[in-house]
View (tube, rainbow, N blue to C red):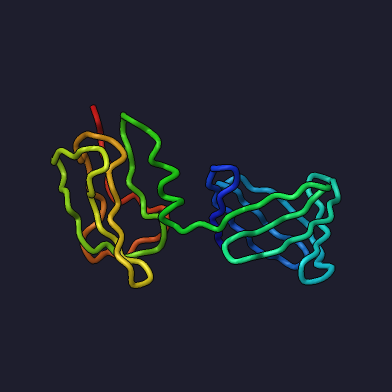
Length: 165
């Protein structure tokens, strides 16, 4: 199962896959092996990196509070579109516009060779009956369009490439 969380103004993609009493955890594609036992609905005992921890977990709306080693950490659940924004920090160079979630390509608003401004919409996708316009993080030219209107795409699929060079 894949989740996206915000912690201290940073957005993280967390992939959890249960395998018996083990769980494979990948945070932004970095795998962390974890053994766990659920003590009660909100309390877990985990072992990671040969260290044992007791963890309390409380979910309140979009907020996940985790109490570990005497410290309280708050994580906010975020949408796939907010996860997409994590990649919008570069100001120049070559940028890949990726699908932030499994979706369908509704409209390609800029074609190969066309100029785009920073913040200009380049492609429209639909997920969960909602359309979202993805915008260019840089000013430049569309160097490659890798999808067609109507295509179904997975999360992380490169839709098009923009180059400022």
